[in-house]
Image 1 (cartoon, rainbow, N blue to C red):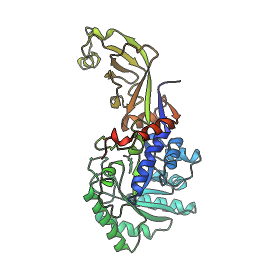
Image 2 (tube, rainbow, N blue to C red; image 1 turned 180 degrees about the vertical axis):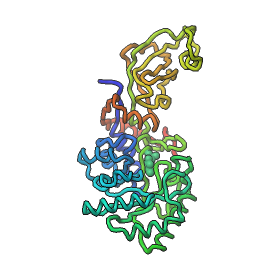
Image 3 (cartoon, rainbow, N blue to C red; image 1 turned 60 degrees about the horizontal axis):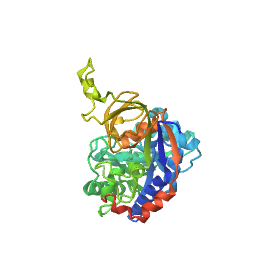
Image 4 (cartoon, protein in one colour; image 1 turned 120 degrees about the vertical axis):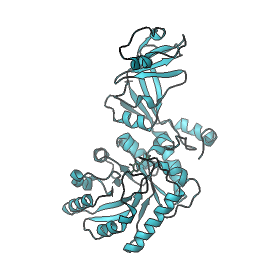
Length: 373
Ligand SMILES: *Cc1c(COP(=O)(O)O)cnc(C)c1O
């Protein structure tokens, strides 16, 4: 099997999707599956749909085009504000998009009219993350303009927290969003179908027993793919955090560990290359580097330590004498490592189903060994 590669266990992703969809459904919240971290990988997208998501969401048009090329016909929403230069293509492949700029909405409307379509608009409201969003005081006027504009249909309001500033989407924020929605509806005399409260970071709130008010949708990527809450890094009860495994190959295994006497022109480099003292540690070089993933965010298997990395090399100290040239080492990835690795041209993606492991997992009550919120 070729390496480096990512082994993707689709059954675990399906299990994660289904688990969170069922829990949120009981609360009146639908899930949109976010595929951006896997670059719109069609099989993973299909697995999310299989697991019960109401459509998909993507940040990049190229990924949506990949989904469409693979024959996926479900509604796809663009969650990053469309580029003005891409308005025509956005209307062509996405049913709806999240928007914050009148200029872009007007371009989408014009494109929709040309294509004899109606493009759905969800307005993003700023609630403290200071990334995308319309300031709440401007929302009424923009809403009114969108309602009056041919070519587009206002589908809802959304917000996004915890991305740029790490502000948690807590009960208070979510209640404020509900209030904003009610006010806009009253002011404009409309009913908003979708109120999208946020991303995976909203799960502690959603599952925490707070009233969900008007929020009836969440856009989930990380929680489904990695089974973790992005803000705390905690595992979500009953979900798998090892659906993805990165496998890299050893290209050098030697004993230079014990010879830090080599002199380095740059002292900061020397620090990276000296193995922590212990005679038994062997240095391994693996054929993967910064160009492939966020190597610092790989979790080292037990008995191995990260020593350093360059664009194409990862140096690991190992206590296991069994590693030799040609051996493979397996890593779990966090979100940053995953999204880069999935986009790396040199990493092969290997899909598998492992239903038997799933049954064992269910039989042994997953909540026992996975932390709950
Ligand atoms: C990335 C993103 C999401 C999904 O975030 P996860 O943490 O992967 O669940 C949702 N909404 C917007 C606007 C995003 O940019």
